[in-house]
Each structure stands twice: as C-alpha cells, then as structure tokens.
Amino acid sequence: MSSNLQKEFPQSHNEDLDKDTPSQNCLERNAEHITDRLGMAQEEIQRLTHKLQMKEKELSNLDSALEKAQLEIGKLKEKDEQTVLVSLLDTIDLQKAKEHNQRLDQEILALRSRVRSLDSEKKFLGEMVEKLKAGMSESPKNKQLGNHSPEKSVGAEQRVKVF
Image (cartoon, rainbow, N blue to C red; front, top):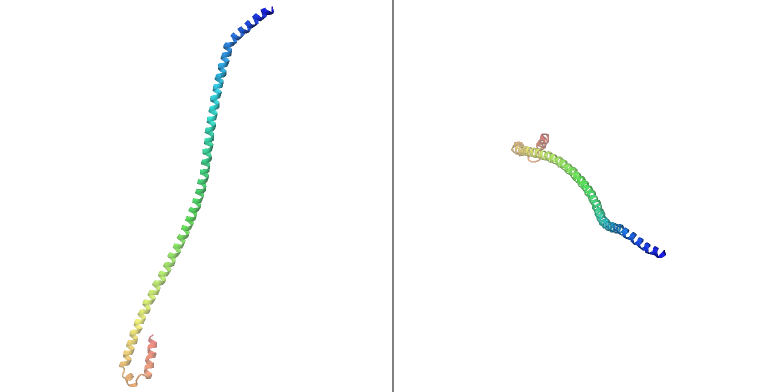
C-alpha cells in the first residue's frame, strides 16, 4: 500500500502541479506585470520628484529676484521722493529768487527815477547858478564894489532862498 500511495501521491501531486501550472503561470505573469508597473511608477515618481525639485529651485530663484526687485523699487521710490522733494525745494527757491529780483527791479526803477529827478534838479540849479553869476557880473554895483561887497552876500542869501 505504501508503494501504492507513493505511486498515487506523486501522480496526484503531479496532477495538482499540472492543474496549478496554468494558475501559477497566470500569477507569474501578473507578478511580472505588477513588477513592470511598479518600476514604471517608480520611474514616474523619480521624474516628477526631479521636476518638482526643479520647480522649487525656480520658485526660490524667482522669490529671490522678486525680493531684489522690491528692494530696488523701494530705493527708486525713495530716490524719486527725494527727487520730488529737491525739485519742490528748487521750485520754492526759484520762486523766492524771482520775487527778490522783482523787488530789486522795482528798487532799481525807483532809484533811476530818483537819479533822473536829481539830474533834472542839478541841471536846473546849475542853470540858476549860471544866471545868478551872469546877473552879478553884469550888475554895475558889483563891478564898482568888487568881490567883497555886502550885496554879494545878499545875492548868496537869495540863492539860498531859491533852493
């Protein structure tokens, strides 16, 4: 019986193996297919991880560039504000200078008018002096009395009155 069992057992075992062989082949194919898919998934994960790292690096570079640009904009705004302030101060200074020049122009015009007035008065007085001198030298009394006559002082007093 034991030899009978041995004969049957290997045969039944072989039959089981024969029955299992298609199932086993199917399982092996499924395992290979799953292994292939797993490999492709791992490659896809590596590719996407690399892509993500590149994007993170690019984002970091862009953040850095943005920060630098914001600092530069801040500096430009500050410089622009200073330029506007300087321009405003220059405008105020220019306005003050114009007002000062206008006052000086008015003073110059007043002084010129005063100089013309004084020149006219000088001319008038000069003519009066010439007339008085001429009148004194033609006067017969002045000729007889000479330069020390009391009338000369009277004439001088008269001149003073004319002024």
